[in-house]
Length: 178
Length: 323
Image (cartoon, rainbow over all chains, first blue to last red; front, side):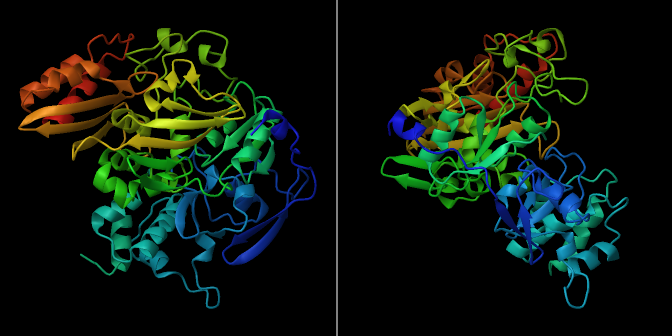
């Protein structure tokens, strides 16, 4: 590859670009730009979910990828929405805490119900992240051992020490109670 | 985060062209777990005008053995390394190091190339610009190294010069022990560099217009024993205070080969060659492990508050070799 070849390539053309974001099985088409309501290339997925789409169930605590509060699912894998650019999430299926309940009946996911039954939270700020991490684990591994649950939740921090109840809550829906 | 232009590259040539055209004002983004932190805190001396997404380049996420070498594409994710059967069986040290990085959500996104190229975690260098202004330090091209007179409890005890930040990459330590090398592409062609030689006190060896394409490792000698240990303040989502990767082979009851790399103590992974020499031809024992640990940190020159890292390094090496 010669240098001439590379320099003759065109820079990205500034034109209308649309990002098709799939969140909780709904498709949102966002126009890339810097105006109001538009998707700035520098917007993180956490920002877009909360500020543009109004899905405030996803919480942002540290905004540095260190606390797990903003965990969402990308194609069934747990990821940190504060550390992803929305513009790079086009075409991927994103699931947030709002997407766990049954869309028709509104019934909570058994995992959400289990968190309630076990009082697996105190202030509750870390709970959406905890639930999404647990959901990713249970999707990949429906009956995890206690150690696997702890490993899967190792990226989620709770400052109220609710972790013991969280592990119990996840165990209860994993079909491996006790 | 301040705004920037964004482009999805679909080939390495395209990405290289964009980097070359913008003369240092474009940055590539793979997993983004390090870059986004740098951008949010305004750490980089030159804020990029353009972010080039390279995740859209196909065929760079492989982990495969090809004849005599293990080849890992720069876009292979850490979760893929940690879960790879091939690595677990033959390159356990890589598998363990990848699994020790941050937490599950970051490993689902972060890439091996990004892990090797990530910026240092020095708290003066990383000081957020929005909290009273960035700290201009030697690493940013002007100013002193604040760690020398400041709080340097996590800084380098070996090899620091002008800047005393340590290389935060766990995989770099594992690759250094395995003798891995990186393939770097640029408009000038391809070059190879050993992972152990990639780092220097003021930054890594990647020029503005270069991209890491692949990391390869010659087959480890014999059915050796490989171990990786990492000491952190809190267990997950933390960078190593000290980490040790060791690849050893025993024949007739004595060490025939040994390669030990220490992370978190120097600007790059530090090959403990003096410790390796101590081991060769000797029978494994607790006493020998302690002797090797002592040799490994010979020549360490701690700053005012980080002498304790020498003891941590010795303890880790004793555990890795002795167990």
